[in-house]
Image (cartoon, rainbow, N blue to C red; front, side, top):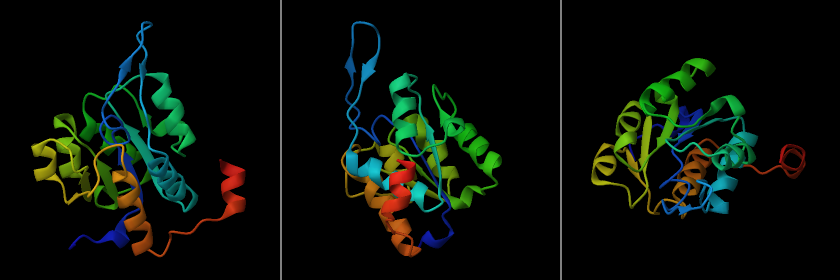
Length: 175
């Protein structure tokens, strides 16, 4: 891979189709239930513990997404719900924290993610992403959305930087 994994300082990601397999269960009250992969979620916690920035940029708007993002280490101000322009929100995240786009990994699986995938320093698509995302991505995971795509990529970046380190005390204090 020709990407410079050592320049990455932050991860931004869509939810449905990236952190989940894209399936949703619509409840009678209008809420939507999703299933998240625990290993993907743990990888985000590892990134947070090791000083990386995290953002969720999703078209979804339920409070369950917001709460899950917080549990994964995403700061409240970096959860962008109901995003209708993901590239613009990616740029807002970068500006808010002083990141250049080249320093950010963006994960996306469908048409609304294509521009953000192209703009990021490393655009990632799950193996089951739409063809447009796969073509735009710098890296296509071996795994589909909700089944290890995020874990594979975060682990790859942190290991390339010698930062795939787990500290039990820090983990216990933060999570």
